[in-house]
Amino acid sequence: MSKKSIIPAGTGKPLAPYVPGSMADNVLYVSGTLPFDKDNNVVHVGDAAAQTRHVLETIKGVVEEAGGTMDDVTFNTILITDWDNYAAVNEVYAEYFPGEKPARYCIQCGLVKPDALVEIASFAHIG
Image (cartoon, rainbow, N blue to C red; front, side, top):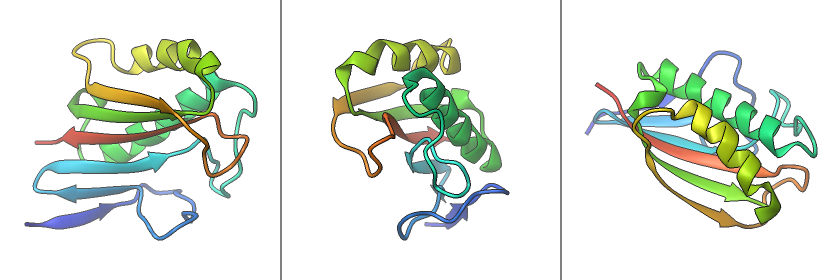
């Protein structure tokens, strides 16, 4: 098995020992992605839709760095802190996956920083 770390230019230092993406045999595993700027500060505090867009743009950057597109994403794990944000998350999410939808699941839980409202991790098959 070949394995390669995927780290887009401009990526900040992670909070823990991980990389944004890991590619193994044409499968890209995108780490849980939070609405952080390059200094790990939460962006768009209180706005679940804007945080979701930021997270998905970050994931898109990892997927593209690996040579793929969002159409290559086959599975997403979505973590939200409050079910009241579920509709806003889904509205933005649908913009990024307008055609064939990836499989997914969504759970409510606490996240690493209290102002973060959403976290998404993805799998993509590229090539």
